[in-house]
Image 1 (cartoon, rainbow, N blue to C red):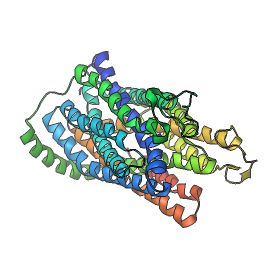
Image 2 (image 1 turned 90 degrees about the vertical axis):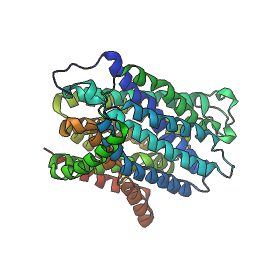
Image 3 (image 1 turned 180 degrees about the horizontal axis):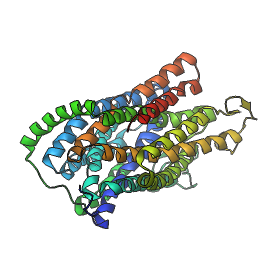
Length: 450
């Protein structure tokens, strides 16, 4: 897009931004805070088995994304249109999310159904996101991409927060008390014993997405058509092969993709194990973890907004460095805490009451968790912004496919390293330490990007 072309109309821009709002509840409710712990604690035979199987499902979808996202991005660049691809992946995403409702504890197929549906939904959402990202340069000049990207992430965080409050406050009830976080009976007569509130996160994510993605299709202009699908497939694949070769010769893009691969792996592990770590080290249950998730989401919203402004003013690379520093501080602080210890060596009186009691370790855990949440939004927003500045405009969808590839191709490494170190040391805190190494490697590689 030429720098002289003004941004698209506000309605078109906000309709594009709403894609992040539409998709975020899936990541907040299903992938991280509600449905994933439900699988580990209610569907699997043991939490350890559930965590392992959830990791395998995540790795399987990540491998499929790594294999196909660059190819699809190249084909989309050749056809020109992006919205038909988003629609094509939105339909199975909605269906897969809705099916999660039927993963009921005690049924012989519940665990298998949950893992398969989650894998399909993850795959489709990542593909749809790749094509949505590629639309940015059709909507605003490159000098405005940082703000658009940051606003999208911020709005997405708000969507995740609202959906989380709805589930914890009105749908998900404690099996012990039968009450929600707000002390009310769950809506629609949901049965807490069958974990109906947890399972409802699937249909809620599906309905939420189906409603709020509509403005993108109705009001956001698509790129003009360049080629029919058949020729576009041949052109796209041929272009992708040349692009992979070009990426190796384009040192800036190649190093950035390697850096993105390293720090995204660390971020994946950080969020994959965050809820499990807080439950194990502090004895938190679902409601306490939900409060923690709300804090992270609020912090992430402010971080994404501020990061987008700083991106346009100082450049995405500086924003990425600042985010990595904050993530490292937050991660180091979190793993230094358990129920009666802070900063690894300082012993404090342990709380005798289960749950979130406001003890010093819990308050510090919340603080460092807030730092992580604040930095995660700008890290992801500035990553796609920096790629816009580095990649050739005519192949932007293809390069966003490569960005998805770099963020997923080794996404199993950091969780695997955490698991192996945990087994070897018998320590949850030591097991989390590889995350710091992945963040540091990402920063070292990013430093070499000019």
